[in-house]
View 1 (cartoon, rainbow, N blue to C red):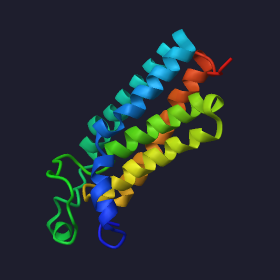
View 2 (tube, rainbow, N blue to C red):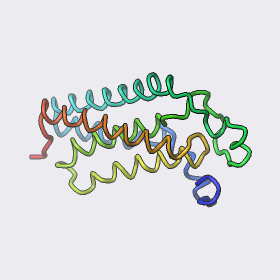
View 3 (cartoon, one colour):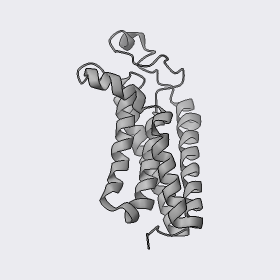
Length: 176
């Protein structure tokens, strides 16, 4: 993926796609849209997103990575000489699971479950957004594909749980 599936366009665009600052407009739009349209339920929704993000970070970074010490491709001497790097650093933490993938798939599932009745078929785009971020982690050389796949699956599980809890306790969001 880092070598054979590359292009000048992807080399230029993908390193930005993994950065939080790049996605801030989307996050702000969603938060403002939900709070303006759903008032108190919107504030609970924001709390659900914060909880989902916090739990995904704790589970991936503080639990899994501490017990599964997998060397990142950018740190592995047998692999690093064969990959291209697009970011200025190689994180020192474990590669398994990808926290980016875990977090964004957890949020995508939460968004999907809580907003699908509001935005309809467009809700599936949340998974495209998460996939792009997960794919980018492999493309820039900081994760193996298995790390992002597992992060994505576990993230979907967490997002499913928090989304279902939100819908059951707070109620399904619907525009009037």
